[in-house]
Image 1 (cartoon, one colour):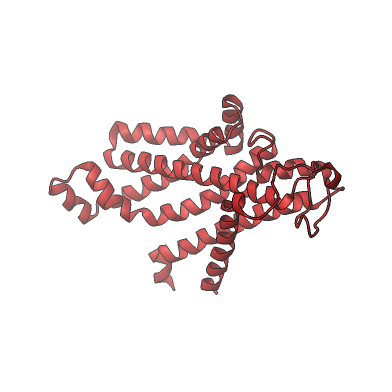
Image 2: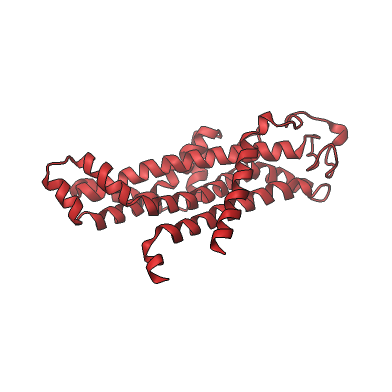
Amino acid sequence: MRQKTLSITLFILSCIVVLALLQPWLPLPDPDAQNVRARLKGPSAEHLFGTDEFGRDLLSRTLRGTRTSLIIALSATAMAAVLGTAIGTTGAYFRGATELVAMRLVDLLLMFPPIVLAIVVVGLLGSSKLHLILAIGTLYVAPFARLSYSSTKSLQEMEFVQAAHALGASAPRIIVRHVLPNILSPLVVQLSLSIAAAVLLESGLSFLGIGVSPPDASLGLMIGRGRGYLYQNPWYVFWPAAVLSIITLCANVLGDSLRDRLDPRLHRSR
């Protein structure tokens, strides 16, 4: 059952990602082409998902919005993973002042609710994709830093790390060759879970009007604009909300499956 669930999850998630990335080359209507005569229409042979308030094709815009949300979420999560892992491992390995500064910086990030801090950062920097990536990436540095910090701490006294240190290996070499490969499993799980959270956060900011700006598309932006036309065309909200829900569910299921496969303690308990 777990194998089937993982296979179905990967298939659905892969289909969404591939369709979103290939959206500019698919034989679909231009997502920016307006047709006021066909505004707020339901699904039809010409427009499979219907149209929005400007008569634009909702299928094209949903795929374009998915691509935008995924690019922002993946870029922000990758940035958070690199920075957070670097901060956590160096702080745990070198100890002393480095550990104090690194972990107090992480504690400072954890003081504020993510959505509130993201609103402040985007509000100060301005609304753009780059600023969204920087804001969301900064917010998710803390989970990676704390996870890599605790994992590195547990490895420092292991025999193979002590042996590498005794043989004269430099600190960067020990971290790259011996520490990182052994803490990679929990970081991969955290990566999949953070992608789902980043997609939701980006959609929330765009829904509030401080994320992606029109005429560009985003799942949150489409939901926010479509709620004003909910009675005229409920499909306007349904499609981006359904895609957002599926992406979040699949990412969380994938994270749980990876944890079950990569955590040796769960294998021993079976």
